[in-house]
Length: 283
Image 1 (cartoon, one colour):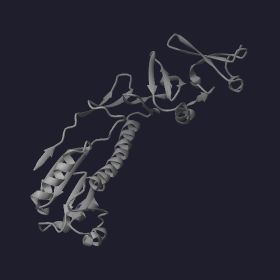
Image 2: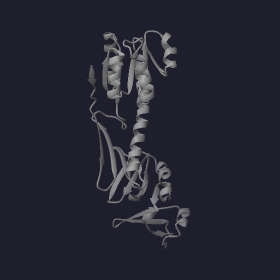
Image 3: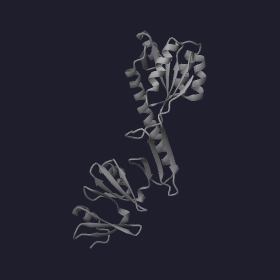
Image 4: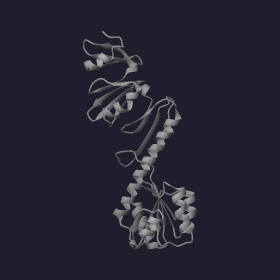
C-alpha cells in the first residue's frame, strides 16, 4: 500500500541569464524557514491494526511526504531497492525469509536510510544494536517518540540536502559565489555583483549591481566573515563595502564614494578605515 502525503509544498530551482542561481522554497501554509525535501517511510508489519496506527500518526506529521506498507521482508526488499525510503519501521520479529539480507542491504548500500526496530518489548534491543540498528520503538508506537525520531532524521536530511545544493552550485561555475538567505529563500550571487551591505537592525540590506536590492535576516557580521576574502572591508558598524567599487575617498568628512552602473553611493566611514584606503584617490 502506498500513501502520498501532500502538505502543499513546492520548491523551485532556477538558473537565470545573469548566472545568479536562485533557490526558492515556499509553502502555502506559513513556515519560517526553508525545509529540506520531506521524508518517505516504509512500514514492515504483518499486523493490520499496528499498520493503521503507525500510518495515522505519520499522516499527521507535516515532515512526511509518503508512507508505504508491506507485510513481510520479502516484499519489502523490492520496495527498498526501487524507492530508497528515508525511514524503515521494521516490526520484529518480522514475517518473511529475507530479514537478515534486508538489514545488511540497508546498512551497506543505503547510508542515508534509517532503520527503526519496532517491537512489543525491550528484549530485542541487543539484537538491534548487534545489527547496526540504533533506533527502537515499543508497540503501540507513541506519537511523541515517533516524532522525536522523525525530527532527528529530518534535521540530518536538511544538512545533507543543503550540502548537495552547495556542491551543485559550487561546481556549476568556477567563479566564487556565496549563498544569501532572504525572506523568500536562498539567492546565490557572485561577490563581484555586491556593492555594499548595510546593517538595518537585526537585518542586512544588500545593494547589488543592476540596481538590485535584497534584505537578509543574517547579521552584518556574518557577511563580514563570508566576504572578507573577496576584498570586502568593514568601514563602520553599519557598512561593509566591496573595495572594487570605490571611486573616491574624502578624508575631510570621512566619506567613501562607491560607483556602479552610473550611480554613486556615499558611505560614512571611520577615520582608521579611511587611512587604510590611502591607495585610492583622496581629497
